[in-house]
Amino acid sequence: MASTLVPRIQGLIKDYDPGNRLLGLMQAEASLPVILKERAEPSIAALIKDASPPVASYARRVVDKLEQASGAQRAAVSSRPFLAGISKNDLAGLGSLKEMPSDRLQSKLIEVFGKWLSLLHEHLAEQGPAASVRAVEAIGRLGWTESVVPLVTAARYQRLQAPCVEALAWMSTGEAQRALVSLTEKSSGPARVMALEALGSCNLVDPLPVLTAALEATPDERRAACRALGRLGVARGWRLLYRTLNDTDREVAIEAVRALARIGDEAFAPTIAALAASDQPRIRATVASALGHVYSQEIREAVVTLARDKDARVRANAIQAAVCYHLDHHRARKFYFDLLRDPHHRVKAGAVVGLWSFNQDAAAQVLKTLIASENPVERATAYWCVGQLDEKGAADLLIDALLKEQDPKAIEQALQALDSLRRSEVFEPVRRLILVPWPKIRTRACAVLARVGQMAALPTLIQMLRWEKDPKVRSCALRSVARLSPPDGLSLLPDGNDPESDRIASNVVEGLAESGQASASHYIKRLLVHRSARVRSTAAVALVGLGDLSALETLEGLWPSAPATAFWTLKSIGELLTPRGVKAHPFLATALAS
Image (cartoon, rainbow, N blue to C red; front, side):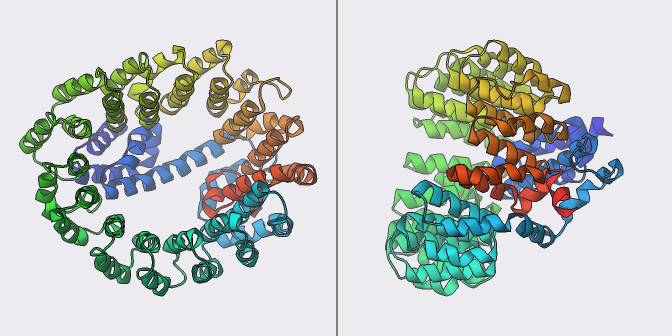
């Protein structure tokens, strides 16, 4: 079954038609065990950056399910030395813990962390600026109702206004959302703008009266209100956005277009497309970009017309949007081929990406021309194309260029393109980068090799550790080895008293925690007595993620001696203990529930 099913799914998710890509994702979702067995996840993950919003959204959903299924598989084969009393038969049902109501876990979290929360409240705005900000961030991540009043009180301090608003937005409770509304009425300037934008996360109170009033205020506040309305996506908000399309301030009108695009309802497409007749290039460029998010075949011709606009930025945005629209084979070849001759590099880049599926030879020739250009901007644009394509042939061109590239900005774009590569076919080209003289490139290559090669990357990464001297590269390689290595491979990692930098030790711990192997706890526990408070707290957080709540004693010991480290640690714990974070770790939910 797998021999025919997986190729069929991969063929659909690589199709140029968004409808077929969506169909492929639906079939993948219904066949998760087969996808995991055949290691087809990278192809699905690549669609998270798809130009079609429905495809990108559905890809995120499928990838989340794949991560959960993969975590359950790891848990089923791991030993659990610190969860005594739970039999191996219980492991088979571990996936059901993912569905446990969050409020049941929340009560346990309050019991475990309640005294720390009180301590954080006492120290708000009493320590140095950095520690106070970390305290606010930790409180927001942990997200308890008792924290609302302390956060609102701390918002009186100017340096804490932005973190407090962000923390309240994170909490997602009725009390926190009412406090956000109150802050918009009491604050002014940048803090009010930030609070207005944060109202876009409100789902338990009605923020529309405040947002409606804000649309009559300053331009900055009107723009923030538009962004919030786009996130809310409610019908009453649409009417407000329609009215704002005619705002006297051009930037506010542009923000309204973006907000409607964010909502993504195809009913808005004709309204947005009508703005393509504007005499202002910025508005036309925004419209061109928005039409790639508000997909509707009815306004396909508007996208094609904008691709021939006199303004280069409009043409570039339009050609990227055109990828979402179904053009028949003959018309697509002509449309993209004509734009290959455009004098602007961004338009050429969009044409290369669009044409690749129809005429790879012609697209590759233009890509080679851009890479060989003496203009670093054109070379950077070519590297962007490679990241969008994620094809072996394009990756070969990128690697050849990186071996010779000297311009810092072009190198940075090339590194971003490397980060976009997800397909296993690019493993061999990327492996050539581990010998380049620039540490930054070797570091990024390590991460890509571990991601696309998985266990096949281990020999290369271990070989690097034998001769690599740069601490940042070693740090990345060690983290990848720690994440991928089976238990007997832990002997390759440095000892807890190794003279490696603290950052390297922390990254190794994080890699071990990401592996999901309970057997890694033996190594991590040795670092609870490391000379560095940062390493000790990182090790404790990792053990908490693996279900060992006894590691909290280490964090309690750090509090009086290194409060700044404790605040930083609590932020990390807060990220673990969001509802999604708790359920993402194979042992933490069990430890809290048992």
